[in-house]
Image 1 (cartoon, rainbow, N blue to C red):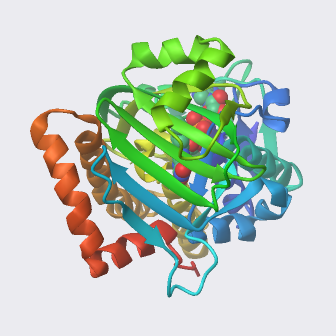
Image 2: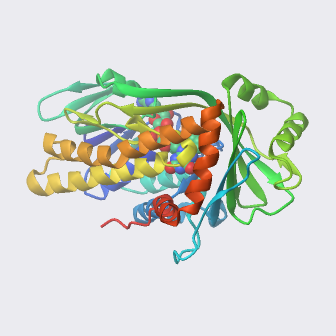
Image 3: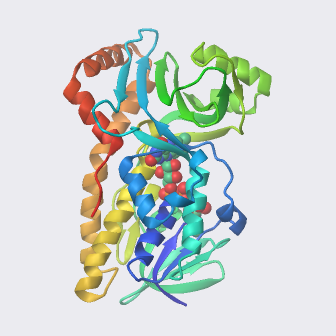
Length: 392
Ligand SMILES: Cc1cc2nc3c(=O)[nH]c(=O)nc-3n(C[C@H](O)[C@H](O)[C@H](O)COP(=O)(O)OP(=O)(O)OC[C@H]3O[C@@H](n4cnc5c(N)ncnc54)[C@H](O)[C@@H]3O)c2cc1C
């Protein structure tokens, strides 16, 4: 079997990459380990993805955005960051920016389903579900991707198999792994008071809580605690859970109750030492797996696949080769420049806001007050959150 490009992993980053490369006229095969039903109708997984304006424009151009039901798209009009009971909030809003929202919240499973449906409609994309990839073998002018039950010869193999990527390891690429020794519980809570599309995140002693506004009189609760305490909450009986959360968030949204399944994610950030080897590239969380606190993971995944597609386009025009060393090198340089500073800054913020020793507490109080009083800083962060840059 032959395919110009083979993508290992049919998550959101892998599918977005498939759409961009098929648009260049390449034949693309996506190998996904999960069964077809999970690709076609992914279940709610608790993640509400805050998309920047740039990410929305990428999803619009690839045809996936129109496949997301409007009721599943929630505008984020303002974001407030508070610390402890010393509530001098740092606020970000769209004032003077000429747009309705800082960004848009969309459930991860809706993004996945939209990308899958669009990929299915493209003649140049073959999706093989229930197919785990075992490894990638070097060859002359091509590589072979070995999967359960077969082998594909391809000019470029791309691993989009998530932050704990087996294929990355099997290709001999190491990674920086930053373990925060915390876990995140995410779920939807309905509430009596309106959220006005304002997201609130605050840092009490011992916990970090965020409430993200979604449609239907509900918010997404994002709670960060040590792993054993999170697990106890995940399995807690519903009434006790509601009472526990009410005690944690106080009267911010009036009466509040659980209306979804609960999901837990361990907080480990990952940064691959290299993004490419011979006719092989890493995309999405397999390249850069961010701490969710700054909501950059998938946004950076979309940027990475965009940079890769642009460089492949240049390579195709030059010599018809989508996987040459020069194409991959330029992609790696661009993606490293786009991600390394954000990865370091996000880890710094996550550490500052999850440690409770005295210098960290004082630093975050002083930091929020100072940041809120510096309008050039606030404006720069707001622009970064929105990322309104339109790509060519
Ligand atoms: C709680 C939480 C909140 C988040 N919030 C935001 C946010 O607000 N904004 C944002 O931009 N990002 C956010 N993110 C990050 C975002 O969810 C991820 O960046 C994104 O889902 C990564 O997509 P991916 O396709 O790279 O990886 P994954 O979604 O992990 O997909 C990998 C796929 O590869 C498949 N696979 C694995 N191994 C193999 C194999 N050997 N063979 C074949 N298939 C394989 C898996 O089955 C899976 O389908 C958040 C993450 C979390 C946990």
